[in-house]
Amino acid sequence: MPAFLAKFRSTLTLRLLGRFVLGLAIGVLFHYLLYRFFLPVQPFIYVAF
Amino acid sequence: MKPAASRLGSWLLLAGIAAGFLLACGEGHRAAAYSKPRAFTRFHQRISPDASFYPPYAMLEALALARWAPGKTLVIIGGNSILNGVAQPESEVWSLRLQEMLGDRYVVVNLAFRGSMAAQGGALVAESLQRRGYPVIFVANTYPHAGCGRAADGPYGYFYWQALHQGKLSDYPARTADLQRWRTARPEAERIKLAETELGARIEAVTRAQSLWVHVSYRHLFTVWNFILGRDFWRPRVWAPDNEPAAPPVEERFRHEPEAELATVRGFTETLYVPGPSGSPQLDPAWPTRLGDEIEAAFVPALRPRMLMLLSQSAPPYLERLTPAERSRNRAAYAAAARIWRDHGINTIVAGEGFAASDYFDRLHLTGEGGRKVAALVAEQITQMNSD
Image (cartoon, rainbow over all chains, first blue to last red; front, side, top):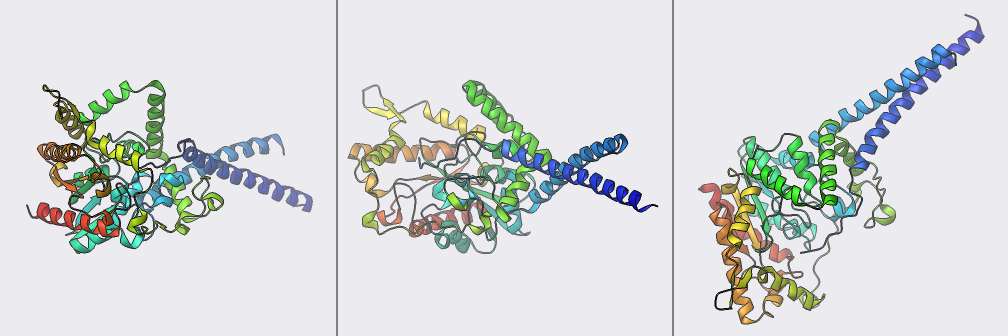
């Protein structure tokens, strides 16, 4: 395989791999946002009753 | 990128999102099965909702089960800050004394939270574990006027919804009907909030997002700012020790807004009285039914004989300032409340009668010494309950 073609293919593979890794990060971020979304907005302030 | 490669890139991005999310869910389920605070004594302030640390329901069960072994009885402590051990430094927490007094046949797990009600948190863990065949005793506290609360109410209500949607609780129609009535009667804003909490619990059952990220917050990095930790908010909570201070000398206690505190002490029983036929106050005749209904809806019948309820008495410096009539009313209301709880099959004692001012840190919370006295009372009751 000519060198320029091999370089193109390796860059392409890296880009595709990068997309997948980016997707993984977004998926994990989405999971984290679910946790944050359901945390109470108002702080819990303890008062003895 | 060529069009075909670009399409492939988009698919890989989507596949990555799905895989990342599923991976996180898997890790969440793994964390739910084992994640718990290290060397746990209690949920101290910095691993409590006060400091934006919301332990998932699964963590409470993991804490209880991690210490249990066949042949041992689990003593699960619920209730509020008094049983959490607020005002007792870590080495003086009353539940440690209780463990020492009960010995190796028992495993004491303190799941009490500040501001929690008796029907919440630990009560659900006790119900769930008893249902699965573990030998359980549940200890909690309240006051005559406060009842036991509702499992789904307030900042700890999420424990109920999570336990329910994770299939941990018994099918108990009295509780379901009571919660339905209560929910329907709430103002719309609260109904929306409750619906959100329940939706969160349904999602937690599938994704375990809270389980995973609370685990990460405890072990690696905390991501929510809060005013208690301030600049150190980001540090993993495993770093934050239990820093409950020791009580100051007794002459420096009971100085904080004494009149307001005294009014609160009066309110513990005053609200239970109504004018009688002769005009003198008498215990509200509707109260036993009201409290009884609350108890019936909160605790499944199987758990009640295995429960010990403590009615926490106020500190002597306040009781001594009541008029003789108020003092007698206070005593009568505590005795009547104990009777009502017992009538519903729950072992009940008044905790604090005969205690000294030095046993209290403030109006309600006990020092290490006061905690030791409560531990002795509870140990005696538990030993008796377990031999019946």
